[in-house]
Image (cartoon, rainbow, N blue to C red; front, side, top):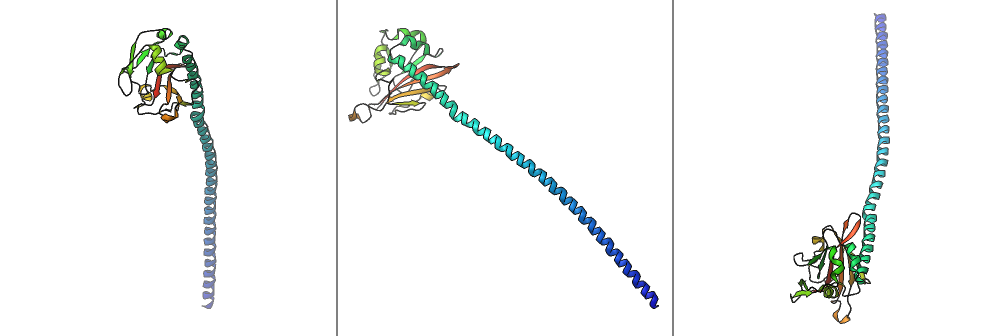
Length: 247
């Protein structure tokens, strides 16, 4: 009996050892599988990190390109436009100063002509417009025309062209102004300035004097504004706007 019990105990011990061994093998196998899975995931994470790094580098390159393009749009193009516009405006003003309306004819807008406005509110129903063919003879034309109304009195402005030139075009030495404004009004009175509304496709240059007699404290300022539109690759004159203090 004792021997049987001993044998049974030995058998139980062996079975226990075998069970423990099997369990360890299973655990080891599971651990190896888990380690393989973890390693695979880590490899995938490394690959994704490399892709993210490449994408970030590409994003930085694209942002730098966008910034460069925006800089070209915001600075280089307006500077180029401003440079050619000012040059054109100075050329036109020199012709106005010299009363060379024959050469000035070449600057006149081929379709719209040139509108003459005595004040900064461009009054399209009453302001006179002349085509290029009229320019060579304007200064010598004695015809009295109505150019609008005087500010304050409302009386009609009735001048021949030379009188209008002396009062509402070149009443000051605008070829040598104190200030030049580009697409920005310098002189303001009580008159509504509607240049951008009348000339939505236009660009303008203002030649401005801030005043002459100290007793008027700047209320005797004067401006002449030249309005241009691009026709092809050239600037063409479309408006000559006189501006001064208004009541």
